[in-house]
Length: 314
Image 1 (cartoon, rainbow, N blue to C red):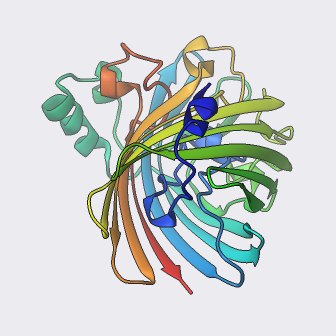
Image 2: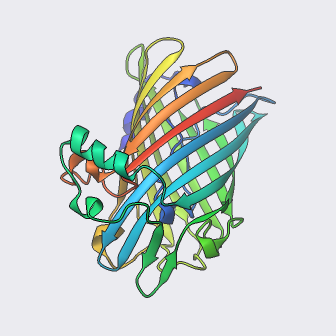
């Protein structure tokens, strides 16, 4: 229904400067599997784009047998190349570092001073821990290294739609939770429509075939994902984005509070620095945004995610 609503919009091609934020759920257990990004407008023939993004995500989750308490720094590198005929290929790699981090006291203050409440489990747990564990199944500590590599292709389908397909290769060390140790494949469809002169609405649906992770139990075979984004182009250089994304949990732990659908809300700002360079700043919130009272809006994910992306066109 989301894409049908978008299809009703005016038949105008979207702009790469006003597309949504290409972010994802940075829960460590989700990061080891493929997720389809918002691809946006395919580049023209022989056009290239290099994207560098740094994301910090602080994750806390202690429910029954599940103990997940760590901070992930992820440096992503994406290279895109236009093939012509409204088609492009892209390759994404990442360097990951999982540790105790430094955001714990900042997030406690954010909960208390901005959201107006405190997470008792978080404030009574020792700060600086780095653990991702399911009792009797697996346990991981701090780790730094190269993650899995994704190769994809995007094809525009008329002025308002595009379809993407991708394969994730197991280049990350599964023994340190830097990858899944298996191949994933996915496909997504996204669409766009204007809402007046400066506003735009984007939507995406996708399906991922996950390989069976070698060092993690309970991998799901199929994971659906959905996303919506409302974009406001304030002027020719400044764009603001409000974005919602949803996906099935990557694994089944047997703990319902962890296996529920993962959902995040993201707020972003994009500044066009020049004809060739663009800077994005964004942050994402999980269920804490609504104090757990509106899981359909925001549910499972890192307590707080913040990122920056620099894009260079050539």
